[in-house]
Image (tube, rainbow, N blue to C red; front, side, top):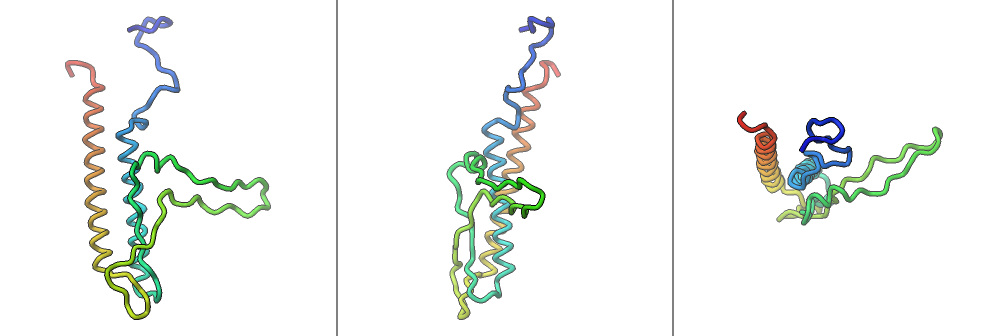
Length: 149
């Protein structure tokens, strides 16, 4: 349907939905963010594998990655130049204590082999999510092409 003002193709308003607003892509972005944060937590566990009393952590899997992405914490504002800068916003996904199968005599519960398995699992899930994202974008490009091309 031509636009009444120009006679050309219809114009869209700024409030129209963009590709980044598609629920599927929002879910994929949330999953990738969660996996990235999980890799950080696992790396922190491995770095503390010799720290006495350290308990391994992991991230709880959210039911809906898209809603977890939009749940942003309240942040402080710096109202005058003399104020101390507020800390960076907290991670969207909270780490919970998840002790591994063994605890050493000094109280450390990190088993490096189990952490490596978690890291490999996260990497494989990340690659799968990236592949799904790439396929989704290919389908969107194909759907956006003019007929006959």
